[in-house]
Length: 83
Image (cartoon, rainbow, N blue to C red; front, side, top):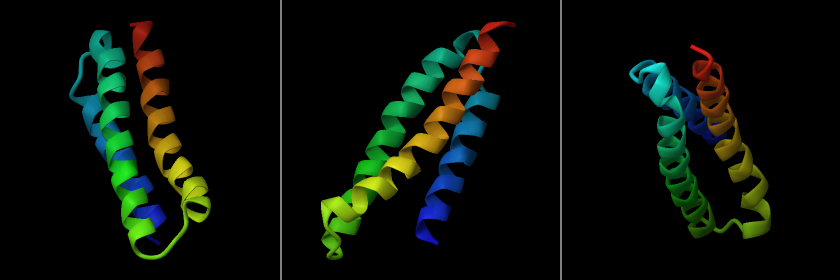
């Protein structure tokens, strides 16, 4: 459930950031979002490991948590370039 909450939160923040940004600036916004979301994912990884999970258990889950919102941000940035 925590994984789903993080993914949905990332998608909401990503959509909000892209909606508030002009299409010409969406590539910059995607870079900033990627960096910030990486920090959030690393924090979540550290939290999971502090609760007894190993890096081997956490890494695949954190990769999905990171990838889905970031791919969405880059897709919207790419679509926004044409306008």
